[in-house]
Image (cartoon, rainbow, N blue to C red; front, side, top):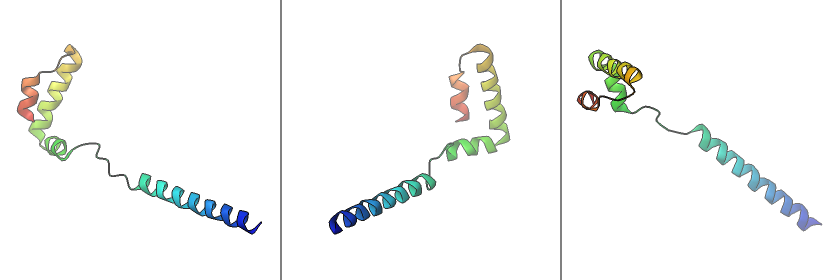
Length: 73
């Protein structure tokens, strides 16, 4: 009987440690949604306005103006 109790306690401790590890990794996720380069482009008023025009044109025509987009980037 003592062995079963120790075994179940050990399994429980391992489970709790695994759960803590999973929660910790989720909370400390450093995934970047937007790159530094994109942030810098959006901070520059002129480039942000040019980008907005390109996106607006894409919404109307359905195709990207890749040359102008490359100039901004």
